[in-house]
Length: 106
Image (tube, rainbow, N blue to C red; front, side, top):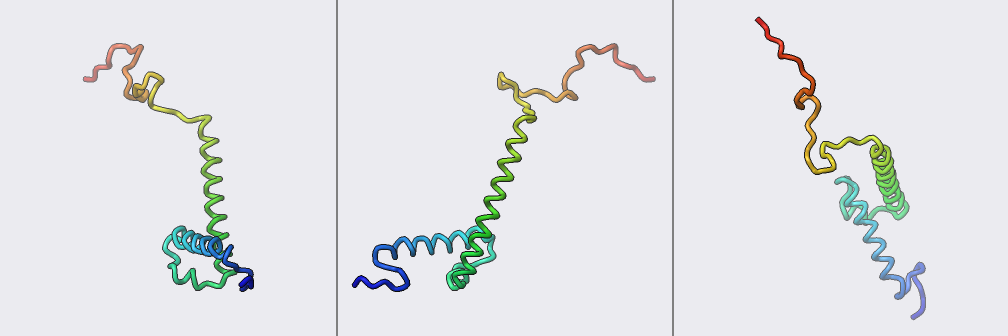
C-alpha cells in the first residue's frame, strides 16, 4: 500500500517519531519543570514548535554569551599558580623585602 497519510510512509515514519519524541524530551528537560510530557505531547504542533524554538534560541544565546565572556576574560586573567606549579602568596602575605626596623609602640 503506497498511500501516504499526511505525507507519512513506512519509510519515513520512524524518523518522524524519533524527531517528535526528541523535541518533546528537549522541551520537558530544558523547560525547568514548566512542562510535563503529556502536556507537551498534546500541545498543538505550532505551539510545540514555537516553544521548542524559543528554548533553543535561549540556550544558543546563553552559550554565545558565555563564550564571549570567556574570550574576553582570557587576556587579563590572573592565576595563583606560577609556572613551576607552586602557589603564589598574595602580596599581603609575603614577607617584606626591604623593611626597616619594626616600629615599637609604648
